[in-house]
Image (cartoon, rainbow, N blue to C red; front, side):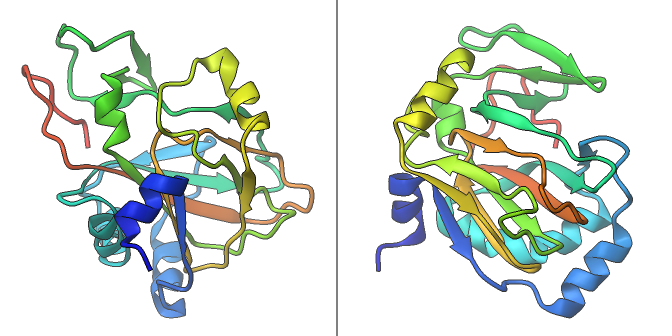
Length: 218
């Protein structure tokens, strides 16, 4: 079998079943707060994320040498908060402050945090891990991905066309599973048709230090 990094580079996603024990998942469930919006950001140094990294860091390192966590978001989809996100490619990173550098932009502020679109090479070296705290079957809005769509920058209005021309997969999971993704992979999230609690901790990892005075928000 090929090394995880090579498999991830080729397909754009990998599945690690039952990485976290039932006890570890129960502890993480009890320590996370109910998200007040579709995505609740956590500091990578928070106790919740630090505990989760005991499960996730080895996988991140296997997929990306030198990977360290740079952003963590809890997605908490419930019957009362059942959103839809169309096909898209993640294109921005969160940084501590705005510094004008060639190749970085446009800039935006989301929930009071500064974001910027970096050169694609930075995104291409990143890996995103999603640790499932609840079961996520076909009816509970698993992430859908378009294989091989992570090799180049995709315009926002072109993501649907790229996905339609690609092999697709619904990333179903059980509590304790981890899915790893090349961060730029084109993906979507449907509304659940049989909604129940679906908590997923998503952590972005990068091997890069930002240059020119830029620093990851982390």
